[in-house]
Every structure is written in C-alpha cells, then in structure tokens.
Image (cartoon, rainbow, N blue to C red; front, side):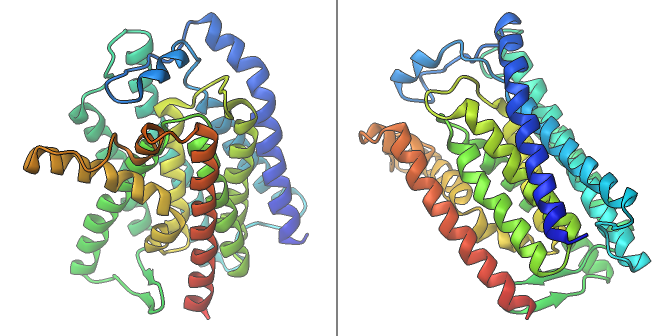
Length: 346
C-alpha cells in the first residue's frame, strides 16, 4: 500500500473523530460547568465575554490523533504493509520514537488537565504553580529522552550540516540537557500561543502538514502518519474553535500539541527544525520573556500586552486578522523548514 494512502487515512480519521467528538463533548462540558475563567489582568478586558466558554476541548483532538495513529498502524499490520521500516533495527527505533512521542504528549496533557481542573473545578484562578507544573513536566521529559537513548536514538541532524553522533558520555549528557531545554521551552511556547479563538489550532495545522511532508520525503511513514493526524486533528478541532469559539482547548490541549510537535521533530532527529516550523511559537514565547525582562530591568513595557497576539489586539486588530496573519507566518516558516530539511538530507 502506498504511504500516501496511510497519510490520508490517518488525517481523515483524526479529522472526523475530532469533529464528531465536539457534538458530544461540548454539551457535556457545559453540563459539567467546565467553563473558561477569564483573567482580565493577563488578557484584554473585552475577553470577559468569553467567560464560561467550555474548556478542556483539547480532549477532542487528543482522542482523534491517538486513535488515528493507532488505527493506521493496525491497518498497515493487517494488510501486510507496515508503516515502520522493514529493517528490524530501524523499525524498532521508529516504533520507540512514535509511541514514546505520543506518550510524552499524552503525559504532558495530563499535567495540563490537572491545571485546567484546578482552575475550573477548584476555582483557583491560576491553577498549578510554576513548580507544580515544572516538576512533572521535567520527569516526563527525562523519561522520554531516556527512552530515546536506550533505543539508540541519540544522533542529531543539524540543518545544512548533517547528522552528528552523540554516542560518547559527553554527547549523552548534552543530549539530555539540550533536549530538556528544547522540549520544556517548546511545550510552554505552544501554551503561550493559545490565547485567542482559533489561533493555536490554526498555527499548528501547517506544522503537522510540514512534518508529514518532510517524513514522506525521507520515506519515514510512521512520522508522516503522525504529522497527518496532527493536521487532521487541528482541522477537526477548528470547526468548533474558530471565532467565535464554542470550546477552548485549555492547557490540556496546548500541552499535548506542544509535546507532539517536539516529539515529531525528535522523530526526524532534528529538534532544531522547530525554529522555522514553530516560528510563531518562538515569537510568542520571546515576546513574553522580553516583556517580563523589560518591566523588571527598565520598569517599562515593550509591548502593549504580552504574549504578542495580545499586543496586536490592543493595537486594534481583530481576532480573525491575527489568526490569519499568524497562520500565514506559520505556513511560510513551515515551507522554509521543509526546504531546509530537504537540502540537509540531500
């Protein structure tokens, strides 16, 4: 079976399952009173009208994406066309990357769920403290990186340079330290991007497409189907999350997306490819860091409000315009990332 068929199956399942789950989940969240609590001190005052919009909607695409990948892998096995490399060693490495990556994303989603639950059910506005978030995130990240090391997945592709082996003790230490910084930073950067209706899902959709294309060009079907599932899940979710949103993904969803995006980069052995693919995430996170540093050091703001999508809101941009512009920037970054990866591997 052609790998393109697997890619289309995965994207289709993720899209349909996620979209249909909205019919059931959104009324259930309303019934449970799992409504978003809007904090006007960290967002424009007019966001108060979003008060009560159901949150934890990320559950929709979490189920859709995981189910899409699992079913597509099963179809491949039943039809005798495995999505993994036929070489036993490479196949085992690909299996570890795929399942460990999904597990990383799922466990990070559980941390996000705990944060959402405390905010919504326990009525503690700020949810988990930074320490309470960071400790479980660090444990999950360490376990993920350990799984890669144990399965001999610790080489790294440097854009325009090629593959670098990290087999020495020093290389392994670097792999853990660098990986912890990249994964923690990426997950929280994606979380920053979830601030207005449709933004995070719209920005992440082309990222999923880019990973599917890059993996296809490398004949890595397992990563292709995961990237396609990511894109399909985001598309299905946006049916319910486009402005005006009927549901919000919450930290449950944004942390899952962050975990999966970074896991896909590691599945291609190229975490640095997140710089062009995740250009919007990077800018969102940097704007927040710059704002905080400027206030502490200069007692002045650089942006009207951070992260940067709120700055543009304060400048008078509509949510639809922000989403459109940021998605275009994301698509351009993703196209650049595909080109960079192609020339790096060839």
